Amino acid sequence: MKLQTIVAAALASSVVVSPVMAQDRDGWPESFTVGTASQGGTYFAYGSGWANFVAENLGVSGGAEITGGPVQNMALVHTGDLKFGLTTMGPARESIDGESPLAPGMKMDNVCAMFPMYETPFSIATLSSSGITRISEIPDGATIGFGPAGSTSDTYFPRMMETLGVNFERRNGSWSDLGGQLQDGLIDVVAFAAGIPIPAVSQLEVQTDVNVIGMNDEEAKTIVDNFPVSEFVIPANTYQSLDEPSRVVSMWNFAMVNCDMPESFVYEITKLTMENNEKMVSIHKAARHSIPENYTKNQVLPWHPGAARWFNENGYSIEDAAIKQ
Image (cartoon, rainbow, N blue to C red; front, side, top):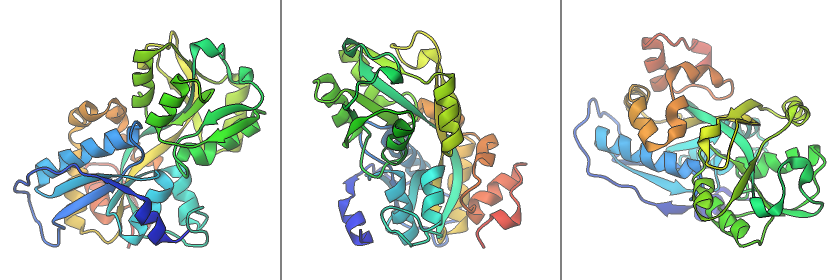
């Protein structure tokens, strides 16, 4: 697929605020846009709120753009069509290695890490009326919604289900749309990969009874052994439907930036975000993990010099070899 097509497929959703005065603005853009994902998912809620927060404090108009998610965001940020984006480490690694399904052979090496976001749990939701309470109970040939085409969920969850022996029919769509299809009985299961709480699940719980399904010991070990993920526990208080913690697997997310963006601009954005976690959590609860200590979770992307400067100044060591030169 041509990158022009990728860009044309992205739908804009503006979040623009009035600028205020900021610090050193040499070379700063007049506006910026961050690539998120579909509405109803965590990326869009997190990215829209974050863009608004940055714009209000640094005097640069900011907006969020609806995209296909991490894979497409890597392509858009690499080419400079978007200056900022959100991605998960699995798609980031594949894109850097030239294995992106959107542009096979293109090494997307002009993308830099900015700050850690949160872990993306891979979780499953069904209607309680389905009687499905564990993965092994998903019926043969069930229709499963895997999110937007090319998203982290769509890239990895079908493979995970196949590895666990689940036979299914695949369905794509926005999280909001898939939640509606689940409620209407048009699909059997939604397999989410998104920061928690997932807005579409929380909304679904208000309208109907939902089962949020985790993995047993054997299932979790099988997936960890075969995919770039680690075990994760969804706290019981995340959803009304959970009576106890739910074991799943997860993948880390990072905010990224086109490597050509001015160092001072990226420094100020990183500083603002990393030093105001309470504000970030008010944007989305998943941001409780958007703290400097989690910078070590990036073993894939080179660091932008502006971001690396803030981390190094504040005692979080990033070696020169890990910084984009």
